[in-house]
Image (cartoon, helix red, strand yellow):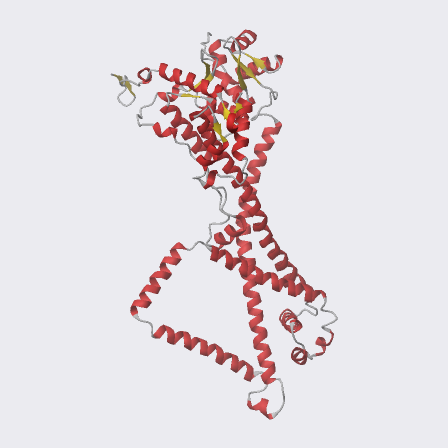
Length: 518
């Protein structure tokens, strides 16, 4: 059976290409690969982009104008082998574990924050009612009997206070105008629609709202493709850097992926400048204007929380309340044995009346838990249930957002540096001679997302670019980039040489629906 030049296994071809690179210590031209593999040139050129992407190739141009593929860091696959497999497994496992943990934690955090607050408030109200009942009904004289004795008078007083508040609310509602009632009703409906679920709001305060640029990979690719279609399928490495905001070495690695995914190829101009051609992206039926491809997208900054400040303030207050009472019960439980001696002899009421300050509330809760649960010494339950658990939770509830604030600030600074790189690289392309750091800062000053706190950020970006593209400092603290200027001129010539008519689709010659040629 005969085979054609397209009848082959891509994996086998890639393996043979990689073997040649290893034997030649990571450097070879296309001609070397063809000679040493014995494969057709078309097959080698077809699979070279995949090998370059997988192993992170760097491209160099020789004096004769040939492209030399180089792997200075060695041939380490980013997709195959034990290491990448373990990384993929760990990434998938971590993603699933984090999703499950978040779901459980969302429920738990609401129960802890709100549940303990309600529990502590309920205990306070019960203690107040008990204190009123003991104060008004604890004696045995005629006056106490006339008031009901046994605490009935105190409970009656408490009930009258509740009744008074209910009546005040009822009358305030009764005398509202119809317009006021309608307006307040509409406002309640609107607030209900706008209100986020409580667990989401609490989770936002503690853990934030995630990555503000979750679809950035897609945004970046669309921007690069739009630029290519607006510029006859040709892009230089510096233009690519201006879109992606990547530093030089990372940009060289990233563009290999684009060559593989979008069927591009590196080319060398007559002057020895490398540029990248993506002719396949020019064969499109959509003829929409792509000049907006020259617009560079910017990454968004992450907010600490999407909640209103007032809402976060309430969460902080609730947690502070729980922290206060958790610390109170923990400290009281640890010193309770010396305090609770007489309680087991039935002298509870007298002890409550005689005890003042912090001790009285703890004694009441201790006795309440003992009678309801039948526990002889509830100190351990109080220590853990009302003491250490809410105390530790409250500390973490404050600590996590506090530490996250530093992480958010650091991540935002990195985003700002990347956005400033985009602006700086565009400025260099527009003015490769005599660009100053001050000019870059002024260009970035209008965007908060492109203004790092580091005053020397623009200077560092220009120095980094100069080191990778043979730039040099000139008078007035400026930098000159003759190599970039030359590459832009050469790319411009290459674009002029591209005839868009060569990529017109032309008339339809076959229609699968009709099954006939035109």
